[in-house]
Amino acid sequence: MPRGRVLVIGVDPALISGWDPEPVIAAVARGQARFEEYGIEARLCLVDLDDDPEGMIVRALREQEYACVVIGGGIRTYEPLLGLFETVVNLVRRHAPAAAIAFNSGPDDTADAARRWLD
Image (cartoon, rainbow, N blue to C red):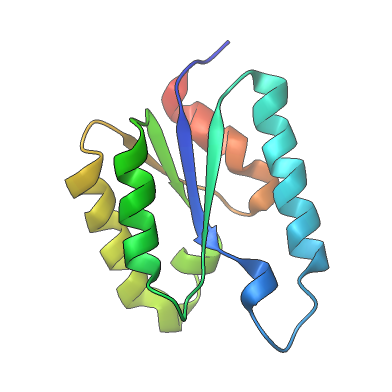
């Protein structure tokens, strides 16, 4: 069974206006449950895009050591957030240089993305 602490970085779906966040919130919960099934300690860092997301990410990266950091698709695949995505990758490199960086295709496969680097 894989071991190592994982940080999952994403956009807080509850703070995005103009859409129903419930399906994403449910998918994030399913994804977190997968970490528990695998016996992997995982911490969520869901950022508010309007309230210093970089600062929140730096604080999370400094609080603990991580074997892997998963950067979610909400940051990675939404073209207007390309600059933030680049910033997040560089923050991980700077503040958690020993951590692997992984990418999920959606909230449901986040644990599997991390396991690729923990196994």
